Image 1 (cartoon, helix red, strand yellow):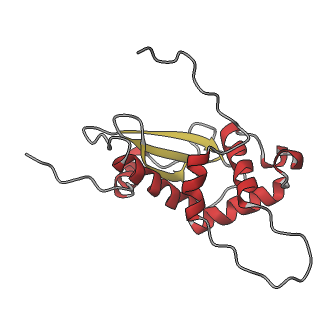
Image 2 (cartoon, rainbow, N blue to C red):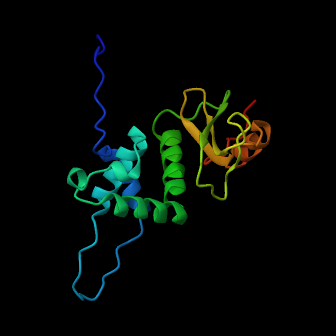
Image 3 (spheres, rainbow, N blue to C red):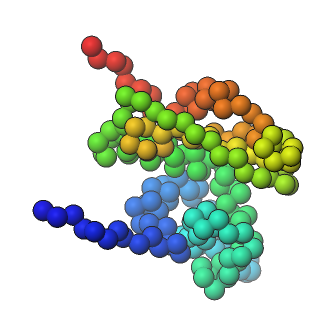
Length: 184
């Protein structure tokens, strides 16, 4: 049987449904408020579609138009920040690694690979540092650990001036799934 020669296109404006189903389980439950008027709360699905667009395209939060998702860019950014502080995305990462380990054929434990990427952080923040490759400007580093198939196992944010060998320890400690006992 021949495999398809074309790949499915990614929809930048809509988070894929299977990923939405997993994320939805991690979101906080809506509280019933006494009706005192005012604007209704933005739909989580519309907000996550806006977040998906920004993360996928790399555009600025302010560049998201209200017409695209029915939600203003400020609401999308505020909800993203709140969910990030609540650890929603870490929970999602853990669920996805567990799913990959159970359903998708398992994690390739034979070897893992680690890489990092520096990015500017001009506003600063708790996990920033002077970037040695950018004239000492403030920056952050994203460190990623993947299995032999390229599936992410762990992700850690550090300051741009933190050496990768130090970050490697944090990456190994924060792997979402524990490695099974070695069978002889």
